[in-house]
Image (tube, rainbow, N blue to C red; front, side):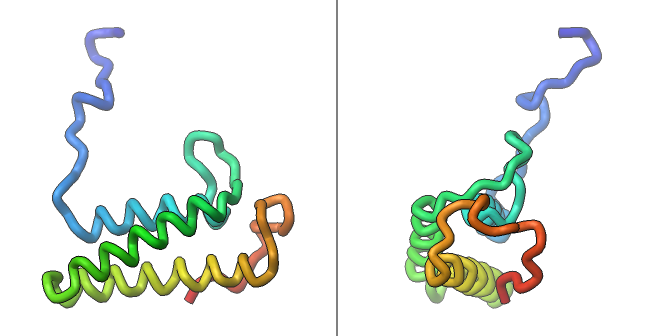
Length: 112
């Protein structure tokens, strides 16, 4: 490694921020739903069991944190849970299992 090269371990990652934590989980769920591209593979794939697991985790987090969040944190978590629930239910209802089953690039009716 050259003297001026920085490694990822040299840059501290932000932590301890509830909204950022929830957002990171939601990005994982959106990747599992095929809504966004995996930044490592540069592909969109669907893994509905993984999306369901992440939704279950977000719902558990919401339930366990009830009454202990700021109004902003609570609203952020509730919105993310609602959006992921909607997207997952929509895919499960249509029987879509993988990103190849549908043209995910042309979807205009995203989560609400």
